[in-house]
Length: 158
Image (cartoon, rainbow, N blue to C red; front, side, top):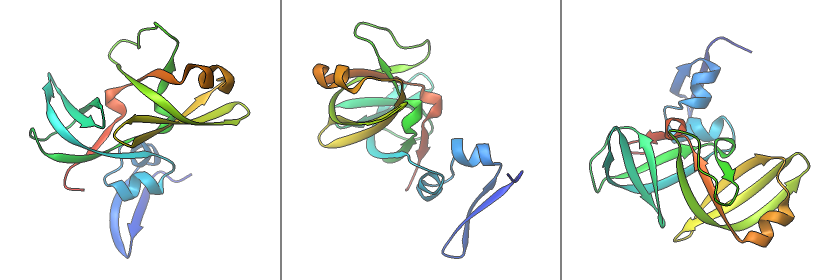
């Protein structure tokens, strides 16, 4: 693997960085999708909570580090593997945020289970989880999940 990668789109440079930086901190929505499966969600900034933006998507608010003003529309990336499903009544890890969603689809792939979570108003969040029993999820119908706000990349003007 290279020490530095250049991602181009239609003959124009989108981002030049290390493979890890391109994957974890893509400069544009195109780069985020080019580097693998991601959730690109669009929401409205509802305000701030300390250093974090509160971005309303569907019936949920996602917290993310970034810049913006209340009422501004933003797109953000959240990788499926960075979302963790929580057991009923469990608290998220320190510094993480939690949300509740309806399970829209479950796909068992052996060690990996892919889920689609409906976070409200038709917004779907894809999740990839290791060692999850789909039958247990299907019986619940809803699930609590958590994510680290530092793993969200906010794109302004996207």
